[in-house]
Image (cartoon, rainbow, N blue to C red; front, side, top):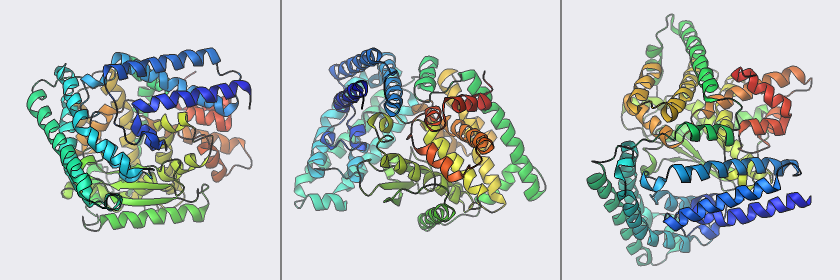
Length: 553
């Protein structure tokens, strides 16, 4: 290891040792259990210290430079530098403490302890529970400063999560892991009740005192959005080029969808075929078991067809989405294992549908697509693969993920499994295209919501018109877009880049195999896809692929 690389590694260790104090949930996610008893601090001194930490890091990285670093450390350098740039500007330009009541909520910090193999679980749980009342009192003071800056959508989401979170906290005493950790129930009962009451008081405070004034803008703005494109996704295309890509993909996919509809039913009535597909779904009582079986079937297919190296050991549990998260996860979501978990246990959440209309989204044709996307060979395989390699599980790569890779890969997997025959029914081509249409529209909505002032109601109306979504479903999906600028566009963008790279390599490499292509693609971890393409296949291919997808020079 060179002297410069050793110096960079020391800088990374020192930075994250301090950074974790201000991001304790991120610390636990990557196995730094010494922060498991903390909640996210939000005082003026804390924000000032975090800002100073990022500025010192950027200065040190500028002085060090990436030129003499070994290849893997060079990738880490770019990822870390980009993340510090984004967070620095977010702290300066968008003080979240004045506008985001959701971010103060500690429910997921408690739920995290239920999922992760945390050393000292009992101590950590007691510490976090005992901190919740004062944490939320401080949050109320922060939000009271400028309630007009709070987006009404975020306030409503915070009220919902706080109310449902109070119920979740009260149920902790019945959780098997809690029962094992505390032989005397009274030791935790008072803390649970106090934390739950604090959440209920927080919800009432938001509803009664702040809701009349909440009229803020959730948009991150053009400058921050551009930083995300450049420093998180590492895309060599501007917003205009991305918007054009999304529009053309939407038009092309809509035409293909109409053509498939003609083949299947003799006309172009996409809504009628959609309704017919949605009508065939498992009952509310059986749909979790159907998901489990489809997940196992997808895993068997990937192994039997040797499509990609399957990391071992690994485990995946299919669970109903916890109540406090259901407003954030309208359908399904994946929670990856901690990198230091020797068993690599992932969680696949499926949200129980309330009513026949939403149950139709879990229909028997679409359900296997979801299992492919979230599990095999989608998110679960990709994240466990990243955790298993030393280079791809470095702290900069674990913490600063890009949806161009992890969501682009998952969407590509749906196409792959259709091509290979797992999604083999004729109607599944229709489902594939309808899902792609949704992801193409996301590119446009992501950009317009955060940079062009598109109102949420108009975005929902467009989803209803283009996709046939019920309004409730559209608004649930859009709620996530408002909180994750740049993430929704990663699905279609990454899918297109992976497909273009595969086509080019298939033409150029006489010994091309899908398995080798997939293994090389996933080797760099969950970083911006252009960086992963550079690392796996070289700078020239990565540039050519972007030019072919986005039409740039």
